[in-house]
Image 1: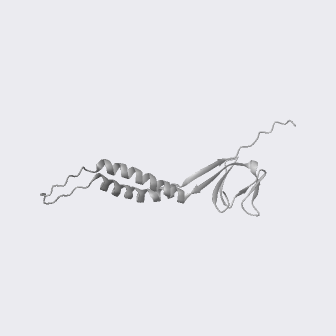
Image 2: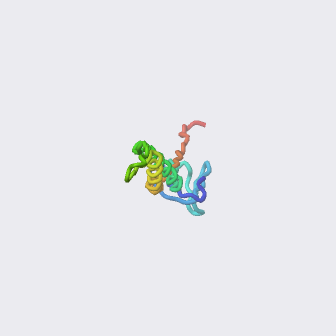
Image 3: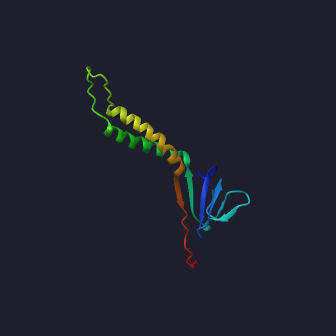
Length: 129
């Protein structure tokens, strides 16, 4: 999961660093040939996926915009004798606001990103064999 990805590594002393190509084993963690640390020194690893965040934001914006648009639309029964018969049906307004919501929410979702957080649990030393 971590190879070819950006990760935010938090150490047990709460220091944080951004790394690429993280590789973890039960006893050691490394991100380049020269950067190696004991896995016991790591508290958590976070992956931030901007593309997935954009997709989630787009879906949320489309859903909210569609619901608001459907509520704001009118029940159009067209009058053939009317001079200027402008009426936007519930479906038309829902579609327009849904697409607008998706377009507005996609960059916001990308900015926030989707976060996967992995907490590293360590066994406590008991001093017994």
